[in-house]
Length: 292
Image 1: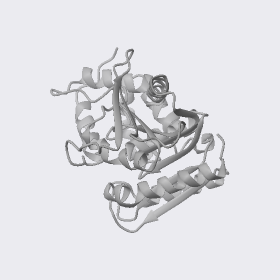
Image 2 (image 1 turned 90 degrees about the vertical axis):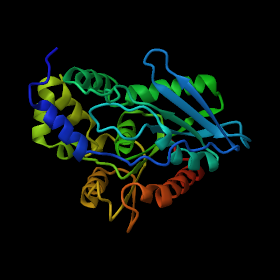
Image 3 (image 1 turned 135 degrees about the vertical axis):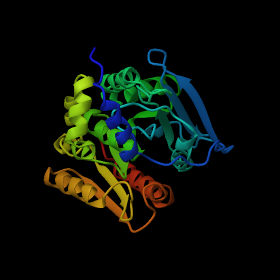
């Protein structure tokens, strides 16, 4: 295996700064008494899976929301943490189950080395950018909780996790819908040619991975309805990039709804308004009986 050439670590650190993701929410958030969360670990990968459901279930078959860990920069994975919890709970309060899962290849612990970055990135690429992780998490969750409805599965996510959700909408046929809050849909533009070229030097297949997993390039492969949400004052994701992706989806004949709010920046807009928009959108699809 080739190591990243001397000097590439500068690009890695630059990418860390430029592609920084969601700020962490308050630490150690409590789980309300009316919500149950069970934590599991996938034996083969060691990945985390958190399954949430209402403590008092009104139905014996719940729609399920798949949510990847947020905060990756789309060339490595991410563990679940307390900062993810605030965006899980509203779906459960609305009567859905949530299957949250970590992504293969988390960023290496300090000291960060080229070898550690290569290992993390290779694992993330081999998981197809979280696709294999989502499938394994859903399989484990279904085994442990038979009330999860296999024909009522949705993918949702914020920022980097929104990109993962969009990739699931391209590759996971059972999805009924996908909600992407403030994604970076054009990964090739997001990374830039120079970073892609340098990472591809040390990480076999990186360029091909970006091409195959950039939602903008692969808009025609989307196979379920999509809700895109963003704020006009987003300081991390330019609204024009999302507008361009919406237009691309529309030209491809895809079912897409775009909700844009004036304020809230990158993260608070999702918590304050976006998730409620997503919940109502899911309920509309459920009432219409949309099938994958």
